[in-house]
Length: 221
Image 1 (cartoon, rainbow, N blue to C red):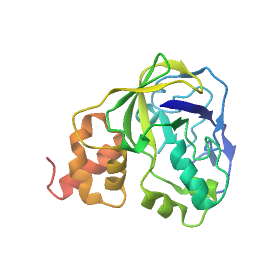
Image 2: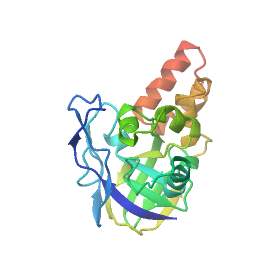
Image 3: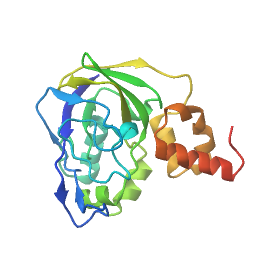
């Protein structure tokens, strides 16, 4: 299990985003290491040199880093019949040999020798992502595939580089994976009350969605 690349993007103006700034940093490119990664506070990316332009849905401590598996990118290359370089989905970390979507909410990874990150949820596709890829019905297709990649908070700051090993150093005692939480938030909302067993580790938007649904249907555990 290893890190193939660390990716960062600069803000650029586009017509397909509804971000207040009219800009996006989704065009992530591999950057030479070592790259400093830390908790960004109320806004921004945890990756040094990476721009986050729509703080309503991206960045901040609960969504400081986004990882996507190269194996899933390769599947999309075949499906879309186009080349997708590392960072093409707006991910900060492109991984190899690791089931990113099978990671548990609250699972911790050690990347390199110092950086520890904790899984908080999965990436929900948006208008900006669809506009960037330029593929027909992209949000629907990406959602149905059900392998969104993982969002993280930073537990211990550190420097990382392409080629660094990734080790899972903690797995909490529940069954809520990134893939399960994503299905709950999108196609199978009846699962939302169940994923609340991972509430203490969950990113804030997903947690609010799950709690609101559970309260509405009086199904909160």
